[in-house]
Amino acid sequence: MSQITLKHLKYFEALAHHGHFGRAADVCSISQPALSVQMKELEQILGAPLVERSTRKIRLTRLGEEFAIRAREVLRSVDELSDLARASRNELSGPFRIGIIPTIAPYLLPAFVKRLSKHHPDLDPHPREAVTQRLIDDLLDGRLDAAIVALPVSEASLTEVALFDEDFVLVRPLADADKPVPSSDKLREMRLLLLEEGHCFRDQAISYCNLSSSLPRDLMEASSLSTLVQMVGAGIGVTLIPEMAVPIETRSAAVSVARLPKPQPSRTIGMVWRNTNPLADHLTGIAELFRDVGTSQAKSLQNPDPDRARHHDH
Image 1 (cartoon, rainbow, N blue to C red):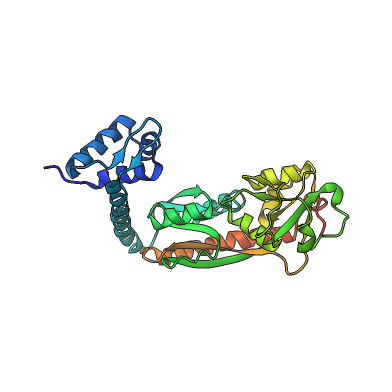
Image 2 (image 1 turned 180 degrees about the vertical axis):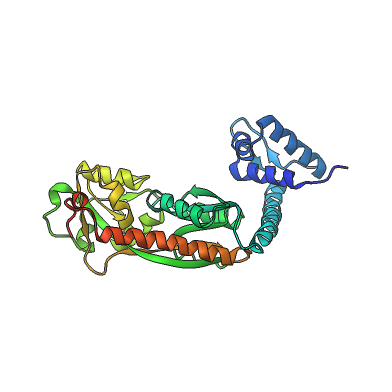
């Protein structure tokens, strides 16, 4: 009788995660028919179906759901055995799967990857951009080695390392540049543009403005900070963005940027990884590299170039 192999587990885990043969096949770098053959072989070994197949997507059977949990545990353990060997070497090498939230990725990821490659030339970074909850799920399931997020995540099985704090700034139409900067109470009376649900930055903005119990009916949402800023430039409302986003997002929009009254809203950026990850010591060093990138950018924002500064009110 055939035996279950790691290849079976890898393919099934991808199928369970993506819920679609085509997407799972792409991730596994095999053809869809080949993936289907592997899944039928696995079901024959087990003597029971793992998935209910349909034209659009698949649904896991009860056995499939339980099997997916165990398969992830096995694959995560295998990865950690490999990481144990990597940790024994002085220099990191091989793939490094790091997640990063969308309100950080466009502004710090390029510089971070460049610095990472300089310090660890044999490391192969595989960045993935997604909202916090997706990154945490992928981290817990072993699909990521670490993630850059806003803290805290409050997950007992994860190590959190705080790296730096960052203020939020107010973005208003350029015509409002000379108006007094509104307090959080005044912001509640204005048309505040927010990121759509799922973004932790949205929750932080709502908390600062104390809107959690009464979001306005005409609330405008967007999937990116870029869209929010462009909407402000069109005179639709105002928004909050993290300070690191200012240089990129405001350069082509008719907006003004202002610091909010104290206590200023802010967030703590940090790196998280599984407590069981054998690469913990190396990850601490990588976290320091990201801290350096973040603090370097913060210093450059404190001394902006004249062309960019002229549209900012402080």
